[in-house]
Length: 97
Image (cartoon, rainbow, N blue to C red; front, top):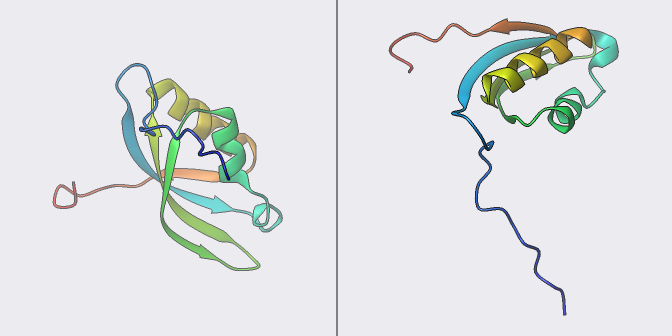
């Protein structure tokens, strides 16, 4: 008989109020097969949601929603850029928000 695992009831980062922001990420060819988003979440307590993606052999483009504390979001973005992923904020119109 399997022992049930204890599952957290919330996925929200703990601490001060969290923010939710969207970014366009562009990957160079040598980064496409690397699990960059997973690596980022191992280093920073952020929640991600992939909103849209297009990946070919030449480039990967991804719309990524990140949620967490402002300091953690800044750290995650800086880490992505350090790892040669281009990060640009998504401009959301008033109608969408």
